[in-house]
Length: 233
Length: 121
Image (tube, rainbow over all chains, first blue to last red; front, side, top):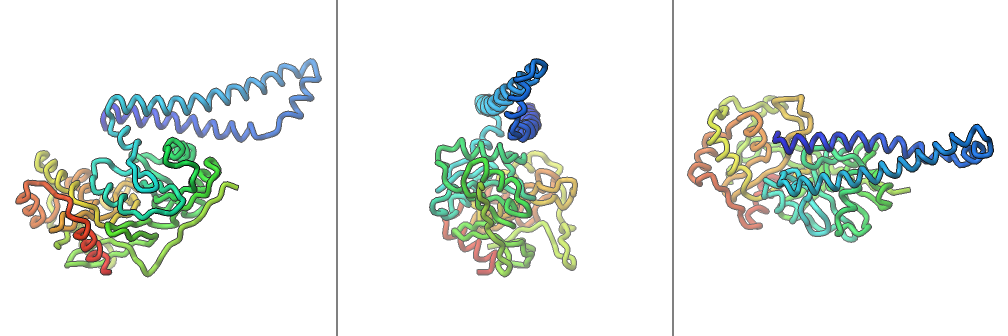
Protein backbone atom coordinates (compact mmCIF):
# COMPACT_ATOMS: atom_id res chain seq x y z
CA UNK A 1 0.00 0.00 0.00
CA UNK A 2 1.30 3.50 -0.79
CA UNK A 3 2.15 5.99 1.96
CA UNK A 4 -0.95 8.02 1.08
CA UNK A 5 -3.03 4.87 1.15
CA UNK A 6 -1.71 4.03 4.63
CA UNK A 7 -2.44 7.55 5.87
CA UNK A 8 -5.92 7.32 4.41
CA UNK A 9 -6.51 3.91 6.01
CA UNK A 10 -5.27 5.13 9.41
CA UNK A 11 -7.36 8.30 9.19
CA UNK A 12 -10.44 6.30 8.27
CA UNK A 13 -9.86 3.85 11.10
CA UNK A 14 -9.40 6.66 13.65
CA UNK A 15 -12.54 8.42 12.43
CA UNK A 16 -14.42 5.12 12.52
CA UNK A 17 -13.44 4.67 16.18
CA UNK A 18 -14.44 8.25 16.96
CA UNK A 19 -17.80 7.74 15.28
CA UNK A 20 -18.50 4.57 17.27
CA UNK A 21 -17.71 6.53 20.43
CA UNK A 22 -19.98 9.36 19.33
CA UNK A 23 -22.81 6.91 18.68
CA UNK A 24 -22.47 5.66 22.26
CA UNK A 25 -22.45 9.24 23.54
CA UNK A 26 -25.49 10.06 21.41
CA UNK A 27 -27.32 7.15 23.07
CA UNK A 28 -26.48 8.73 26.43
CA UNK A 29 -27.64 12.09 25.15
CA UNK A 30 -31.05 10.63 24.29
CA UNK A 31 -31.61 9.74 27.96
CA UNK A 32 -33.73 12.55 29.34
CA UNK A 33 -31.51 14.09 31.99
CA UNK A 34 -33.54 17.33 32.28
CA UNK A 35 -35.48 16.36 35.47
CA UNK A 36 -32.27 15.23 37.16
CA UNK A 37 -30.53 18.40 36.03
CA UNK A 38 -33.39 20.58 37.42
CA UNK A 39 -33.28 18.72 40.72
CA UNK A 40 -29.49 19.08 40.94
CA UNK A 41 -29.66 22.80 40.16
CA UNK A 42 -31.97 23.33 43.12
CA UNK A 43 -29.38 21.84 45.49
CA UNK A 44 -26.23 23.83 46.32
CA UNK A 45 -24.11 20.66 46.22
CA UNK A 46 -25.62 19.59 42.89
CA UNK A 47 -24.93 22.68 40.79
CA UNK A 48 -21.53 21.44 39.72
CA UNK A 49 -23.03 18.14 38.49
CA UNK A 50 -25.71 20.01 36.51
CA UNK A 51 -23.01 22.21 34.93
CA UNK A 52 -21.06 19.09 34.01
CA UNK A 53 -24.05 17.67 32.11
CA UNK A 54 -24.22 20.92 30.12
CA UNK A 55 -20.49 20.73 29.43
CA UNK A 56 -20.78 17.10 28.29
CA UNK A 57 -23.53 18.04 25.82
CA UNK A 58 -21.46 20.91 24.49
CA UNK A 59 -18.43 18.61 24.01
CA UNK A 60 -20.60 16.06 22.24
CA UNK A 61 -21.81 18.69 19.75
CA UNK A 62 -18.28 19.92 19.14
CA UNK A 63 -16.97 16.38 18.63
CA UNK A 64 -19.75 15.59 16.13
CA UNK A 65 -19.02 18.73 14.14
CA UNK A 66 -15.28 18.02 14.39
CA UNK A 67 -15.64 14.50 12.98
CA UNK A 68 -17.58 15.66 9.95
CA UNK A 69 -15.11 18.53 9.39
CA UNK A 70 -12.13 16.16 9.73
CA UNK A 71 -13.56 13.72 7.20
CA UNK A 72 -14.25 16.52 4.72
CA UNK A 73 -10.79 18.00 5.27
CA UNK A 74 -9.25 14.53 4.84
CA UNK A 75 -11.11 14.04 1.57
CA UNK A 76 -10.00 17.45 0.29
CA UNK A 77 -6.41 16.75 1.29
CA UNK A 78 -6.36 13.37 -0.42
CA UNK A 79 -7.93 14.86 -3.54
CA UNK A 80 -5.29 17.61 -3.64
CA UNK A 81 -2.52 15.03 -3.26
CA UNK A 82 -3.82 12.83 -6.03
CA UNK A 83 -4.55 9.72 -3.98
CA UNK A 84 -6.40 6.95 -5.78
CA UNK A 85 -8.54 6.71 -2.67
CA UNK A 86 -9.81 10.21 -3.27
CA UNK A 87 -10.76 9.34 -6.87
CA UNK A 88 -12.48 6.25 -5.65
CA UNK A 89 -14.32 8.13 -2.95
CA UNK A 90 -15.69 10.60 -5.47
CA UNK A 91 -17.39 7.83 -7.44
CA UNK A 92 -18.95 8.57 -10.80
CA UNK A 93 -22.38 9.73 -11.85
CA UNK A 94 -24.86 7.29 -13.34
CA UNK A 95 -28.42 7.78 -14.44
CA UNK A 96 -30.41 8.31 -11.24
CA UNK A 97 -27.51 8.04 -8.80
CA UNK A 98 -23.83 7.45 -8.24
CA UNK A 99 -21.48 4.46 -8.47
CA UNK A 100 -18.45 3.85 -6.27
CA UNK A 101 -16.58 1.09 -8.09
CA UNK A 102 -12.85 0.62 -8.78
CA UNK A 103 -11.84 3.52 -11.06
CA UNK A 104 -9.12 1.49 -12.83
CA UNK A 105 -11.73 -0.82 -14.32
CA UNK A 106 -13.24 1.15 -17.19
CA UNK A 107 -15.87 -1.52 -17.79
CA UNK A 108 -17.54 -0.73 -14.49
CA UNK A 109 -18.75 2.51 -15.95
CA UNK A 110 -20.37 0.65 -18.83
CA UNK A 111 -22.17 -1.73 -16.51
CA UNK A 112 -23.29 0.97 -14.10
CA UNK A 113 -24.47 3.10 -17.03
CA UNK A 114 -26.53 0.15 -18.29
CA UNK A 115 -28.49 -0.01 -15.04
CA UNK A 116 -32.10 1.02 -15.55
CA UNK A 117 -33.54 3.96 -13.63
CA UNK A 118 -35.47 3.14 -10.52
CA UNK A 119 -38.18 5.83 -10.86
CA UNK A 120 -38.19 8.33 -8.01
CA UNK A 121 -35.20 6.72 -6.31
CA UNK A 122 -31.52 7.54 -5.86
CA UNK A 123 -29.36 4.54 -6.83
CA UNK A 124 -26.14 3.96 -4.90
CA UNK A 125 -23.88 1.37 -6.58
CA UNK A 126 -20.91 -0.14 -4.71
CA UNK A 127 -19.52 -3.49 -3.69
CA UNK A 128 -21.30 -5.06 -0.76
CA UNK A 129 -20.84 -8.18 1.33
CA UNK A 130 -22.21 -9.51 4.61
CA UNK A 131 -24.63 -6.57 5.10
CA UNK A 132 -21.85 -4.01 4.59
CA UNK A 133 -21.00 -1.53 1.82
CA UNK A 134 -17.38 -1.23 0.63
CA UNK A 135 -15.80 1.84 -0.94
CA UNK A 136 -12.05 1.80 -1.72
CA UNK A 137 -11.95 -1.69 -0.18
CA UNK A 138 -13.05 -0.34 3.21
CA UNK A 139 -16.40 -1.07 4.85
CA UNK A 140 -18.45 2.06 5.49
CA UNK A 141 -20.31 2.59 8.74
CA UNK A 142 -23.95 3.69 8.44
CA UNK A 143 -23.09 7.33 9.32
CA UNK A 144 -20.31 7.33 6.69
CA UNK A 145 -22.64 5.92 4.05
CA UNK A 146 -25.40 8.37 4.98
CA UNK A 147 -22.90 11.23 4.78
CA UNK A 148 -21.64 10.09 1.38
CA UNK A 149 -25.21 9.95 0.00
CA UNK A 150 -26.06 13.29 1.60
CA UNK A 151 -22.99 14.90 0.03
CA UNK A 152 -24.27 14.13 -3.49
CA UNK A 153 -26.45 17.00 -4.76
CA UNK A 154 -28.18 14.40 -6.97
CA UNK A 155 -29.64 12.63 -3.93
CA UNK A 156 -32.12 15.41 -3.13
CA UNK A 157 -33.84 13.50 -0.28
CA UNK A 158 -35.10 10.75 -2.58
CA UNK A 159 -35.61 7.18 -1.33
CA UNK A 160 -32.35 5.24 -1.73
CA UNK A 161 -31.71 1.99 -3.58
CA UNK A 162 -28.52 0.29 -2.39
CA UNK A 163 -27.31 -1.64 -5.43
CA UNK A 164 -24.77 -3.35 -3.19
CA UNK A 165 -24.81 -7.12 -2.69
CA UNK A 166 -26.21 -8.57 0.54
CA UNK A 167 -26.94 -5.20 2.17
CA UNK A 168 -30.52 -6.36 2.79
CA UNK A 169 -29.48 -9.67 4.38
CA UNK A 170 -30.20 -10.62 7.98
CA UNK A 171 -30.78 -7.66 10.27
CA UNK A 172 -29.37 -5.33 7.60
CA UNK A 173 -28.20 -2.93 10.27
CA UNK A 174 -26.44 -0.56 7.87
CA UNK A 175 -29.46 -0.27 5.51
CA UNK A 176 -31.84 0.21 8.45
CA UNK A 177 -29.60 2.80 10.10
CA UNK A 178 -29.12 4.72 6.83
CA UNK A 179 -32.92 4.88 6.44
CA UNK A 180 -33.15 6.33 9.95
CA UNK A 181 -30.27 8.78 9.48
CA UNK A 182 -31.47 10.08 6.10
CA UNK A 183 -35.18 9.91 6.96
CA UNK A 184 -36.06 8.11 3.71
CA UNK A 185 -36.94 4.58 2.61
CA UNK A 186 -33.91 2.41 1.74
CA UNK A 187 -34.26 -0.61 -0.57
CA UNK A 188 -31.50 -3.24 -0.44
CA UNK A 189 -30.98 -6.74 -1.90
CA UNK A 190 -31.05 -9.83 0.32
CA UNK A 191 -28.51 -11.56 -1.92
CA UNK A 192 -26.23 -10.95 -4.90
CA UNK A 193 -27.29 -7.93 -6.99
CA UNK A 194 -26.43 -8.42 -10.68
CA UNK A 195 -26.61 -6.25 -13.76
CA UNK A 196 -25.78 -7.07 -17.36
CA UNK A 197 -24.60 -5.03 -20.32
CA UNK A 198 -28.04 -5.33 -21.92
CA UNK A 199 -29.77 -3.67 -18.96
CA UNK A 200 -31.05 -6.76 -17.15
CA UNK A 201 -30.66 -6.81 -13.40
CA UNK A 202 -31.88 -8.65 -10.34
CA UNK A 203 -31.11 -10.43 -7.08
CA UNK A 204 -30.00 -14.00 -7.69
CA UNK A 205 -27.67 -16.60 -6.19
CA UNK A 206 -24.58 -17.74 -8.10
CA UNK A 207 -24.80 -20.72 -10.43
CA UNK A 208 -21.69 -22.59 -11.58
CA UNK A 209 -22.09 -23.72 -15.20
CA UNK A 210 -20.03 -24.95 -18.10
CA UNK A 211 -20.23 -22.66 -21.13
CA UNK A 212 -18.04 -23.19 -24.18
CA UNK A 213 -16.18 -25.91 -22.28
CA UNK A 214 -15.20 -23.53 -19.45
CA UNK A 215 -16.40 -23.05 -15.88
CA UNK A 216 -18.38 -19.84 -15.42
CA UNK A 217 -20.21 -18.35 -12.44
CA UNK A 218 -23.36 -16.50 -13.38
CA UNK A 219 -26.80 -15.69 -11.96
CA UNK A 220 -29.24 -18.46 -11.20
CA UNK A 221 -32.58 -17.13 -12.36
CA UNK A 222 -34.41 -20.14 -10.92
CA UNK A 223 -33.94 -18.77 -7.40
CA UNK A 224 -34.77 -15.08 -7.33
CA UNK A 225 -33.97 -13.08 -4.18
CA UNK A 226 -35.74 -10.00 -2.88
CA UNK A 227 -35.34 -6.27 -2.60
CA UNK A 228 -36.15 -5.51 1.04
CA UNK A 229 -37.44 -2.15 2.19
CA UNK A 230 -36.26 -0.34 5.30
CA UNK A 231 -38.16 2.62 6.69
CA UNK A 232 -36.94 5.44 8.93
CA UNK A 233 -39.57 4.89 11.62
CA UNK B 1 -16.69 -15.87 -28.47
CA UNK B 2 -14.15 -17.80 -26.41
CA UNK B 3 -14.25 -17.92 -22.64
CA UNK B 4 -11.28 -17.79 -20.26
CA UNK B 5 -11.49 -19.37 -16.82
CA UNK B 6 -9.11 -20.16 -13.96
CA UNK B 7 -11.08 -23.12 -12.65
CA UNK B 8 -12.09 -26.66 -13.40
CA UNK B 9 -14.88 -28.60 -11.73
CA UNK B 10 -13.84 -31.46 -9.48
CA UNK B 11 -17.12 -32.99 -8.37
CA UNK B 12 -18.98 -29.94 -7.08
CA UNK B 13 -15.83 -28.02 -6.10
CA UNK B 14 -13.88 -25.50 -8.15
CA UNK B 15 -10.16 -26.15 -8.41
CA UNK B 16 -7.44 -24.03 -9.97
CA UNK B 17 -6.57 -25.50 -13.37
CA UNK B 18 -3.30 -27.39 -12.83
CA UNK B 19 -1.84 -26.23 -16.15
CA UNK B 20 -1.94 -22.54 -15.19
CA UNK B 21 1.51 -21.14 -14.45
CA UNK B 22 2.70 -18.38 -12.13
CA UNK B 23 4.04 -15.13 -13.52
CA UNK B 24 7.61 -14.21 -12.53
CA UNK B 25 8.02 -11.36 -15.01
CA UNK B 26 6.78 -8.02 -13.57
CA UNK B 27 6.71 -6.37 -17.00
CA UNK B 28 4.59 -9.13 -18.51
CA UNK B 29 2.32 -9.00 -15.50
CA UNK B 30 1.67 -5.28 -16.00
CA UNK B 31 0.95 -5.79 -19.72
CA UNK B 32 -1.49 -8.60 -19.02
CA UNK B 33 -3.19 -6.54 -16.30
CA UNK B 34 -3.50 -3.67 -18.77
CA UNK B 35 -5.44 -5.92 -21.15
CA UNK B 36 -7.52 -7.58 -18.45
CA UNK B 37 -8.67 -4.19 -17.10
CA UNK B 38 -9.88 -3.16 -20.55
CA UNK B 39 -12.81 -4.34 -22.64
CA UNK B 40 -16.41 -3.80 -21.61
CA UNK B 41 -18.39 -5.25 -18.75
CA UNK B 42 -20.73 -8.05 -19.77
CA UNK B 43 -22.16 -9.16 -16.46
CA UNK B 44 -21.45 -7.74 -13.03
CA UNK B 45 -22.41 -8.49 -9.45
CA UNK B 46 -21.66 -5.92 -6.75
CA UNK B 47 -20.18 -8.70 -4.60
CA UNK B 48 -16.79 -9.23 -3.02
CA UNK B 49 -16.04 -12.89 -2.41
CA UNK B 50 -13.52 -14.97 -0.56
CA UNK B 51 -10.11 -15.50 -2.12
CA UNK B 52 -10.11 -19.20 -3.04
CA UNK B 53 -6.34 -19.39 -2.64
CA UNK B 54 -6.15 -17.39 0.58
CA UNK B 55 -9.20 -17.87 2.81
CA UNK B 56 -7.88 -15.19 5.19
CA UNK B 57 -9.24 -12.68 2.63
CA UNK B 58 -13.01 -13.18 2.96
CA UNK B 59 -14.19 -10.15 0.94
CA UNK B 60 -11.68 -9.51 -1.78
CA UNK B 61 -12.57 -10.97 -5.18
CA UNK B 62 -14.90 -9.22 -7.64
CA UNK B 63 -17.56 -11.16 -9.55
CA UNK B 64 -18.38 -10.52 -13.19
CA UNK B 65 -17.18 -10.77 -16.78
CA UNK B 66 -15.54 -8.52 -19.33
CA UNK B 67 -15.22 -8.90 -23.08
CA UNK B 68 -13.51 -7.35 -26.07
CA UNK B 69 -15.87 -9.12 -28.49
CA UNK B 70 -13.50 -12.05 -29.15
CA UNK B 71 -12.90 -13.33 -25.63
CA UNK B 72 -14.90 -13.21 -22.41
CA UNK B 73 -12.90 -13.23 -19.16
CA UNK B 74 -13.79 -12.98 -15.48
CA UNK B 75 -12.99 -9.92 -13.32
CA UNK B 76 -11.32 -12.28 -10.87
CA UNK B 77 -8.60 -13.05 -13.44
CA UNK B 78 -7.17 -9.58 -12.76
CA UNK B 79 -7.31 -10.19 -9.02
CA UNK B 80 -5.59 -13.60 -9.07
CA UNK B 81 -2.88 -12.36 -11.44
CA UNK B 82 -2.26 -9.25 -9.34
CA UNK B 83 -2.36 -10.96 -5.95
CA UNK B 84 -1.07 -14.49 -6.67
CA UNK B 85 0.62 -14.19 -10.05
CA UNK B 86 -1.72 -16.76 -11.68
CA UNK B 87 -1.36 -16.50 -15.45
CA UNK B 88 -4.37 -16.91 -17.76
CA UNK B 89 -4.51 -19.95 -20.06
CA UNK B 90 -1.85 -20.00 -22.78
CA UNK B 91 -4.25 -19.53 -25.72
CA UNK B 92 -5.69 -16.39 -24.12
CA UNK B 93 -2.19 -15.06 -23.37
CA UNK B 94 -1.21 -15.58 -27.02
CA UNK B 95 -4.31 -13.65 -28.07
CA UNK B 96 -3.43 -10.74 -25.75
CA UNK B 97 0.11 -10.71 -27.09
CA UNK B 98 -1.20 -10.56 -30.69
CA UNK B 99 -3.37 -7.59 -29.67
CA UNK B 100 -0.37 -5.82 -28.18
CA UNK B 101 -2.03 -6.18 -24.76
CA UNK B 102 -4.83 -3.74 -25.59
CA UNK B 103 -8.47 -4.63 -25.14
CA UNK B 104 -11.03 -2.42 -26.87
CA UNK B 105 -14.52 -1.91 -25.55
CA UNK B 106 -16.85 -3.55 -28.10
CA UNK B 107 -20.23 -2.12 -29.21
CA UNK B 108 -23.18 -2.54 -26.83
CA UNK B 109 -24.84 -5.22 -28.97
CA UNK B 110 -21.68 -7.35 -28.81
CA UNK B 111 -21.60 -7.08 -25.00
CA UNK B 112 -25.30 -7.96 -24.89
CA UNK B 113 -24.62 -11.06 -27.01
CA UNK B 114 -21.80 -12.02 -24.65
CA UNK B 115 -24.17 -11.66 -21.66
CA UNK B 116 -26.73 -13.89 -23.38
CA UNK B 117 -24.06 -16.46 -24.17
CA UNK B 118 -22.93 -16.58 -20.53
CA UNK B 119 -26.39 -16.71 -19.01
CA UNK B 120 -27.88 -18.97 -21.68
CA UNK B 121 -30.81 -16.63 -22.34
